[in-house]
Image (spheres, helix red, strand yellow):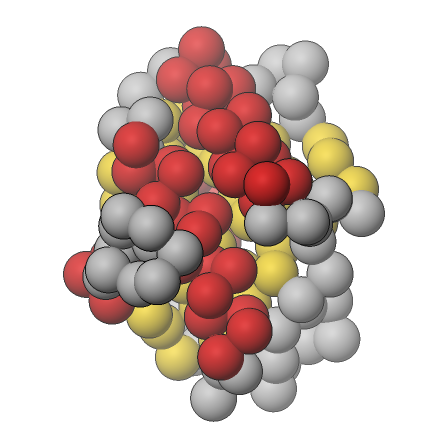
Length: 128
């Protein structure tokens, strides 16, 4: 079960991604499966430029919440950008890379938070 703090971070990140027209948003509770993070957030963009814009929007929104990534990978190529915030790791994919790497299936046993649950209204303003 994800903590309230982790769920808030996921919702803030998901809202930023959705504002940049990310699609196939999905959060996975992986805490019982790995020590890497409590949750993964996966989302897709149609092309490299959109992937980069989504990743930038997420970083900007989380920075406004006082959070900075511990590590970022893939910004130059923008086919798969990984944003590591400790408790959550955000994967922003091009459609092709998401299909190729198959994280949805690889972590298929993880409990998921649906796109609808991620994009609910909260006190953080707007859809978060």
